[in-house]
Length: 215
Length: 215
DNA sequence: TAGATTGTTAATCGATTAACAATC
DNA sequence: TAGATTGTTAATCGATTAACAATC
Image 1 (cartoon, helix red, strand yellow):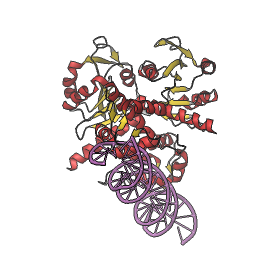
Image 2: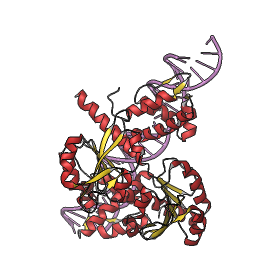
Image 3: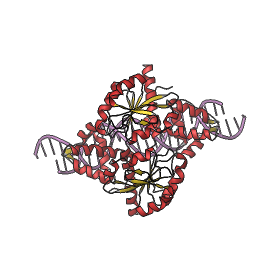
Image 4: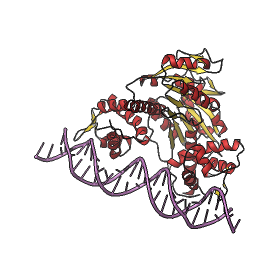
């Protein structure tokens, strides 16, 4: 309920809390202290309490946190108590893989449409959703009140397509294209740069080999 | 050449520098100052110089940085001057999509094998590589000197499979399973938790809606 | 040499951890 | 009430930015 800006460092940790609390809940655990949770998640109890207190007091002195309550509060913070309609732009391997991923649906992300410029892909189906040509993009977004676009096209066309999406009312882009999008204030972008991630892994392998050789 | 530990914050920025330098290089740009690069990338010039100086001096006073040289130096730091053999464990949609992604090959990551426990998938082919049954995993790793395993199986089996991989000499895991792996010291793990990323996007959408309503 | 720009030290900012008073 | 554990303030740590001397 606070108006103070929450740092992205805190936000980045919320999905992980959410995951652990969901698992505890499934195991029937009713309450947990910051200390117990800290041991489970390998973070400090202090950080857990600080993080939660950014959003108001979810715990109770002498008791700890109610797992089910906290789970639902974090869901609310993350906006998972609402549904979000999304489309996928780019019906290549990655786009189709994401369309087939059922867990998104379970969290309220609704797969509404998929688009590709390749005529060979148009008409094929991804989890019961028919691939449409790019020409139908604008109309579809308006008619189906689409909030999120998943961008799984090569970097070459990504910026132009992102602009088209935003001009037609898309509010957030989950960007898998290997390019930085600079979009108007208020349009949310979350980048998944897979090759960057792989390079980090490569760095760590390389560094570790060197350390080992140096003793 | 320094022995001082480089922070992960710095490492995370290297692939992005590498990408921009590659593009500048392709455009035929010969040299660039930290100031020019900072404007292009929307970071501070100070940060750029600090970052590079973690690895030694790549620039020259009064001149700036030679684009081609810097590009190759960063490639070396990231271990991209060597090849890395990888296998994919889990031949579902995501596993197959990653197997088909040609850009990894271009950076020296060699797609050597793919495995699945589902007999229906065994024998099918992904970019010319035949899906093998899980029973052949151990032998394959040893015979082909595999360094990296890409884990694209459901979370249920992920921990057990990760242990199997590590016990057979895998040195790094690119983990797409939605679970935290705790592996021995020296085994590198890079997590790609797609649903966490999507939840962050959802948070930012939700937050922005609230801000707008509050004026 | 004069101008430009790095490499590096110092200052600032923000995030994490520690400590403890508040309170269930 | 006594014990436990939060919520929150204060202390520490680390990362980012600013400033400038070194030097090409």
